[in-house]
Length: 256
Ligand SMILES: Nc1ncnc2c1ncn2[C@@H]1O[C@H](COP(=O)(O)OP(=O)(O)OP(=O)(O)O)[C@@H](O)[C@H]1O
Image 1 (tube, rainbow, N blue to C red):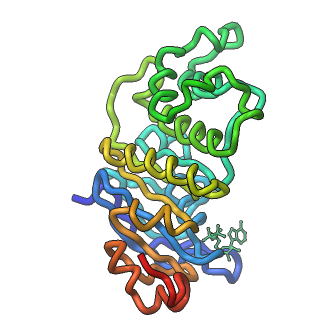
Image 2 (cartoon, protein in one colour):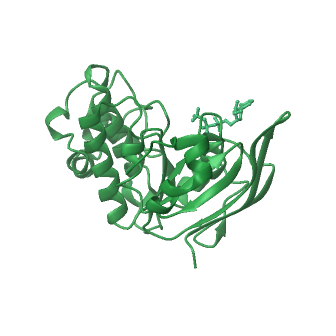
């Protein structure tokens, strides 16, 4: 059975059909890119999967369980985590405190001191995202690349089994909205190697991207969305040869 099943997903904004009947399936542990021009519906699709937006119709099954109608927090409990186009971090806190805050979610009381909470658990996420050297840096002082890596670490730390006092393992879906946006080529490469490593650890990853070097050579499969409809779905080398995708998005000069 496919880990994620999306069937005939629709979300309109007035007359704009942001998602106009989108269907696809993802296998567990695959790393899949969702690409398409500005306004194609990628962010709307993510928001409908993670729960920030409610779809008007359709069905989404994650590990066989329906997701639509659940809140983002309920979806996170079922293993669905996400990041945003612009990194969402707490600027005035340190890198370590950002992670401690996520790891302590729902467990902190006003008398707790953040620095005594889950420092050990946070170390594993710092290491996974190459953030140890800057653990005590205030986030406002970080490079954007480090901020994006911290946001990714926070998404991983948000899964229920990563948090204090919870142990049940859940199947993990990670939705990354433009993980490499705003990054210089070298930072982009580092970021995408980390994303690939997360997928290789068994996490199902779906990500959007406008930088094609962060898509081809990274994703196992590529989905192409245009005007709210899926127009191509296949292995990267197949999609790169698709005449409509070349004409309307990649450009005729595109080569791998
Ligand atoms: N809250 C909203 N209200 C009205 N229209 C919206 C809203 N959110 C998205 N849209 C419209 O829905 C369509 C799809 O937008 P969406 O942001 O999902 O595209 P996208 O593929 O993520 O684009 P980009 O690559 O620029 O981020 C666009 O026409 C957009 O203007």
